[in-house]
Length: 179
Image (cartoon, rainbow, N blue to C red; front, side, top):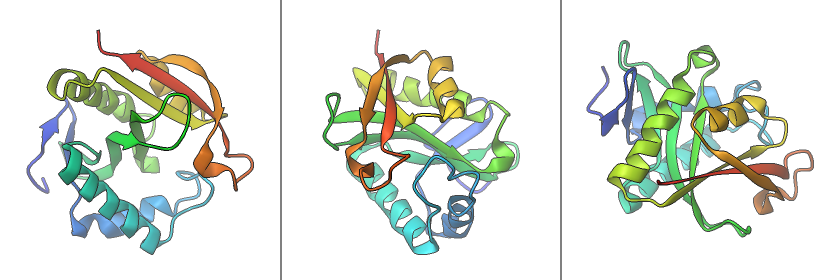
């Protein structure tokens, strides 16, 4: 295994990002299938900036979209986690749960398992009252994960950070409250 985890689920380990993750992370972010529901694949430089933002987010908040590894192999499969979002909508600012996995990690239940564990972290360990999740309309795989983890669809919205990208601006919004 590559290192110490902040927390684990049955098959996954969650940790902050390390600089040596950049090559694998950049490879994932340039995959057209992985980035199908985003405006464009990311360059290596864009992936590096995103990774640094996630590192800083963890240091500031104690959570992030965590680097996520398989416990059995130590393989980095992508990210699953929580992030504070401030873009202007009827439901923000809010804490978002999100995921992005390499293609060879799809269809194995990792996103659902990891998201459930991150909900537990958010609700039971961090004391968060409500968590949201968003995706572009048509991203049925992500929407299915939202449903599987018990989130409720609250509506549709135009994402204020995607106004320049027609086809990606229309999004759905799910929510779950700590009970």
